[in-house]
Amino acid sequence: MSSLKDKIVVITGGNSGIGYATAKSFLAKGAKVLITGRNPAAIQDAVHSLGHPAEGFKADQADLGDAKRLAEYVQGRFGKIDALFINAGVAKLAPFETVTPGLYDELMNVNFKGAFFTIQALLPILNDGGSITLLSALNAYAGSVNATALSASKAALNSLGRTLSRELSGRKIRVNVVNPGIIDTPLLEKVGLPDVFKTHLGNVTPIGRLGKAEDIANMVTFLASDEASFITGAEYNVDGGLMVHPLIA
Ligand SMILES: NC(=O)c1ccc[n+]([C@@H]2O[C@H](COP(=O)([O-])OP(=O)(O)OC[C@H]3O[C@@H](n4cnc5c(N)ncnc54)[C@H](OP(=O)(O)O)[C@@H]3O)[C@@H](O)[C@H]2O)c1
Image (cartoon, rainbow, N blue to C red):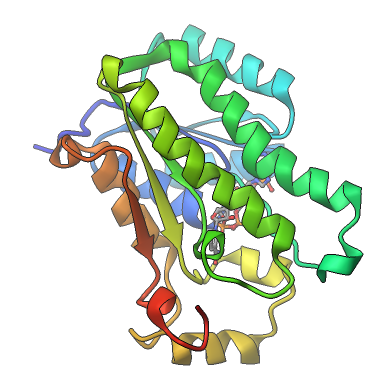
């Protein structure tokens, strides 16, 4: 039997792409999943297509009040949770000279500050022995063009994961980070990546294709499971080998 059976999992940003695929994977392993997002209609559609026992809650990760409301709701609904997947994030690219304070704040507020305080809000109701998985990005390490603020907002999560894994070890809470390469989700369209460039990136990835949301979901569900009970403070690149490719790194 899966060690995730009947575990309670919260996934931020679970109505699309990687978060949605991960919710599906947890549900297939018998877990109960609550997803968040900003768009109520998208959450409702996702919960409907994920099926029972998926649930949703509207929470903007950039809104620290929403983080508190989420924690209160989850506590009232489930009492405690077993796993938290910080997946919600935005990706916007701009040449360094054109990054405005507004764009900088948006990226930092959703990707890092919001992630930080969502964890802080949910920590009191995370069971001892539970897990937190943070979704960073390969560009936290690779020098991706036009990604100064985006990459820094993700790199901060890698740092947080290492530090938190030490601070929470007393409660046997494991904290790990996943760094996806280029994953074929609606995000690529949102950053304006043309199809021809997507094909190119798939071709230059050593494994010969873009990642699928399920590739990340497999790693995240593994990290939340008992099979990963000795893994904490770690990070995993799930990138088809892109990090070591000389054209990218
Ligand atoms: N796709 C890639 O190549 C790639 C590579 C590296 C890292 N990542 C990371 O993977 C994560 C998921 O991205 P994806 O590729 O699955 O993209 P996606 O399909 O665009 O999904 C993004 C999800 O995040 C939610 N979200 C965005 N901003 C939010 C906010 N402020 N509060 C709550 N939810 C929010 C969205 O829901 P709403 O719109 O309803 O808010 C949606 O559910 C992101 O953190 C991204 O940085 C993706």
